[in-house]
Length: 204
Ligand SMILES: N[C@@H](CCC(=O)N[C@@H](CS)C(=O)NCC(=O)O)C(=O)O
Image 1 (cartoon, rainbow, N blue to C red):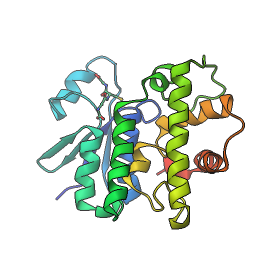
Image 2 (image 1 turned 120 degrees about the horizontal axis):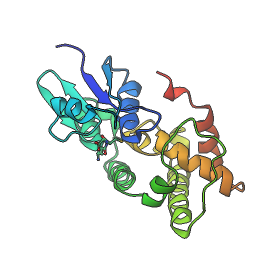
Image 3 (image 1 turned 90 degrees about the vertical axis):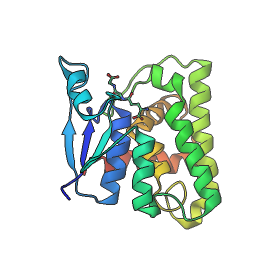
Image 4 (image 1 turned 30 degrees about the vertical axis):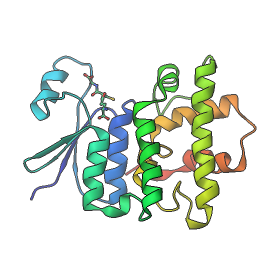
């Protein structure tokens, strides 16, 4: 069996690419990263050579092609069960959080598209954006209140929910907006934002 391949866009801008990459990196799996310059000439044809869905990320292991971040995460979790919590109720909660992140937060995505290198962005704080930010803070606060004793991740130890939420660069946008709009952060949220700012897991 050769090394698996991960076809991705630019990790600075493609939050979906980054999530799959973070999960593989965190697992310590040796994989070949195949970057594709999205939205440049010929990129679609190149993507379609790997997957009929024509979107990144795409995970390839021998003959197997898995596309869509959550499908990739679930496939990896079958091979590496520690990616979800060992507690069935926590797994359900972590799956809900991951799915919510995967398919929602439109105001945040729209007004603060991912850019890990962005600093000092000025963004109009609409009611929808405020709601998205509050929702993220509520998720973090609840998880940390319930799992603080088990470790420093949302569910104590690292799970897929991190890849899809706190530890994703997508949430760096949320953090940037939290820093701008909400200097009075609760201790639970402050712990996460400061850890994220220092977090080395963006470097492989
Ligand atoms: N729900 C999909 C979304 C994938 C997606 O939209 N990827 C974007 C990059 S972030 C893409 O490939 N865009 C290229 C295109 O739409 O042509 C997933 O999680 O994999």
